[in-house]
Image 1 (tube, rainbow, N blue to C red):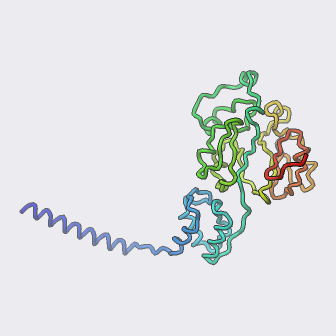
Image 2 (image 1 turned 90 degrees about the horizontal axis):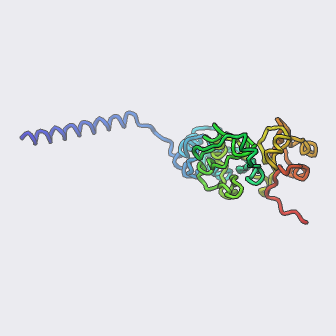
Image 3 (image 1 turned 30 degrees about the horizontal axis):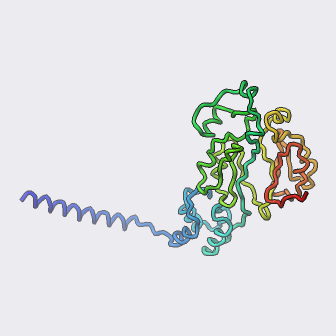
Length: 281
């Protein structure tokens, strides 16, 4: 008899709780715009956070709720995805030129001296294989304290297999076909040598592959291809696309007309040209 009462009590309690849950669900029910699901299906589903939201779902909610979506952009999906979303929602989306990650350090193992003279004045790092940890306690194995540490933090955070460490040079290399310009590698690099730049017409672009702010004489000893701040590239540029600050040249991708005069003028071969056809000999 006691067992029967126990079962009945549990049944009554279960029914009561079910009624309570039903009332609460109806009372606090939130009506969600059905367009959010459809908008999310138009997004790439990478959930990388490059758009500034924690995932594609949050991005879809913002796209549906905001009247002006010109400030919202999905780097992974690019202009085509944003155009599809804008057409579906009946809103106008701002167009942006495709970008790609570039590594602004060309100081490979062969080009940055690593001899006993350098090691004599540097401490030896023997810690975790992480650029972030190494950068906080150590300047690197060479005389350049601005260059790539080569531990691959950028590789670890990339969800698209778009960046790898070249074992020969010790430097990261970007696989442009896989790069979605999500910017994770940019944030992961403690030396700030990775930058998102415009892909450029036909994938052509010119940039300074150095971030060293040391004076010319110091940079020249530390790296054979480091920017020495001579300013020759600034003088030869007819479009005022190159600036020189803190002993370092920088090429503005918006102003640059890809004439490449700066490339041949640079005495250190620091300025890199990408995507151009091979020069005729």
